[in-house]
Length: 247
Ligand code: NAP
Image 1: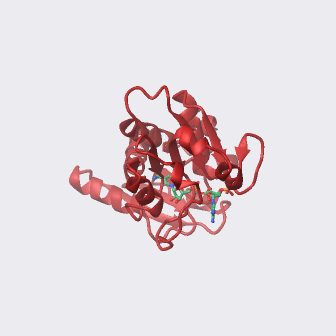
Image 2 (image 1 turned 30 degrees about the horizontal axis):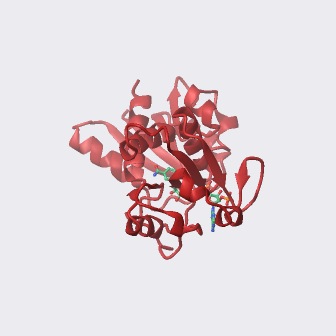
Image 3 (image 1 turned 90 degrees about the vertical axis):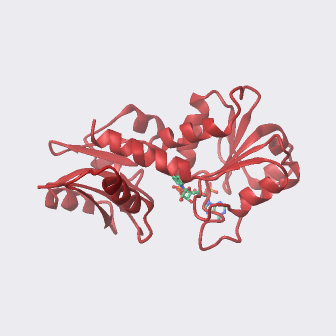
């Protein structure tokens, strides 16, 4: 029996992960392994999936199940505990163990964007969903103070209006977009922030990887900011998933 890996999510018609792993298996002569997409309407279906596929060794988890999967796991490692979200599951002896490799991907990709001394940098996180949690965890680990901007104000979270009425963008230097604004096919969208405060000493990181240059990154780039998309983060989290499944 071969080894099976896969992705659960909904909808998952366009998956980076399947292409990535199929290419990896071929390029590295990894035989007997396959990667499949499992579109689940409801997270409860995970139980049936695990029971019906004895050859499953590992899963990636995407929208909208990164948090709702948690009650179905037997345990979580430190990475997933820290973030409160799971994007990798290792299946061992019938037990499901949750991990978070998004933080590994974002951490390592961000370090390549920032200068080696980033002690003067603080961060603004746009959006307050699942991936914002991972981004916030990494910034806190790196000692980068940060604020989150959301359409809904809450404790330690400001609104886009608050942001527009302040000089926070000018001061912060690192802006991370975790919203889906600008993602294919709605490439004309972008987060509503005061771009006139962006300068050549800013760093813009967009978690979106399709298109390669969102309007958010384009606008920042035109103002001289250094800009990076989410592709490297995605590749790093996929590689880390493979390490987790095979460790
Ligand atoms: P999510 O849980 O749905 O969160 C996205 C957040 O964006 C929402 O919670 C919302 O925050 C904000 N948002 C949504 N629609 C908006 C709108 N019309 N205007 C303003 N804000 C809006 O999704 P996610 O899992 O965090 O993923 C977000 C993006 O990151 C997606 O594009 C995804 O593909 C990408 N991503 C990339 C990687 C990678 O490896 N590169 C990994 C994970 C995710 P508020 O309600 O607080 O405003």
